[in-house]
Image 1 (tube, helix red, strand yellow):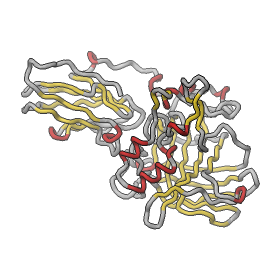
Image 2 (cartoon, helix red, strand yellow; image 1 turned 60 degrees about the horizontal axis):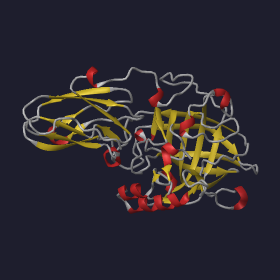
Image 3 (cartoon, one colour; image 1 turned 90 degrees about the horizontal axis):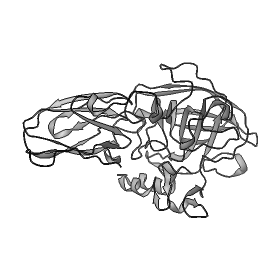
Image 4 (spheres, helix red, strand yellow; image 1 turned 120 degrees about the vertical axis):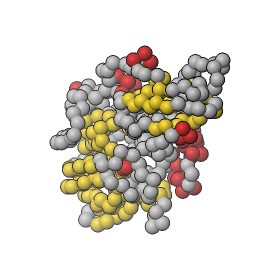
Length: 386
């Protein structure tokens, strides 16, 4: 298990209980209790090394095992990303679309499966930002807040969340299931071991199929009831004659046929990308950086009646913005690597909150404060790492 993502027994990270506490609806809280790997892993579910200094692996079943069997299948999928942020309405209300064609696969016993698409679904999980249910050209999983941290943070050509039915041997066997498609940088080594975050990116020669991308299909044990409530339910399929906790199908020999962007031939992590770092001296005013899910600095200061210039830089892996609500200050929602500058003059001494207004990001930790006070008080910007 990645120490970067999960910490150590003395300092555990990616805990589930804080996310449960942020969830506003009881069904979501219950879902996370029954299927915690959506957002983290409880310490009691983590195996510890003999010396007690590190976590080694999960003690509960997950869709991300190092064990797999060769099956047969094919697919044709198009990610249509029209919406930059999750909407505020029902989870199924979105302008995005995922077009599935010729989706088929077998299981190790020879059962034949297809999927029937119903609608896009934006998981109402605290911290998740699925960009309307479909996103392209960005990172998720790991510490991004979107997707299970049991998967390392991965670059995705495209990914989607949707609802649909499972068809086994020509018969619909399960309905209203959550499907998660993602075409990502390859995260499986030549012996099919799931790489941890510190090992990425993998060179093509070190991957299972000798290429830099592959496509995952995960059918989650999450079913939407007739009342529109997500519930934890094992998947009803004929394999072994019993319900399964999930299905995870890997298409290791995929091809990206068309994309409106041109990612590098070897995907790097955001903090490894070749780019000139922006320093405070190179931007007007105060530089504030935002990522998943923090602002740095967390506290800034200004003087009443004097113009303030703030340059916000998105150093994360998904879209963010910067808002001071009481002062009517707001940047556009910008993509990773972009900057936006705002100028304003606070007239009254006070403490003003600022935050990222992308749904879920403020609750996840993207918030801070602007202290407006007369000169004579401390004027240095405070930097807090979270």
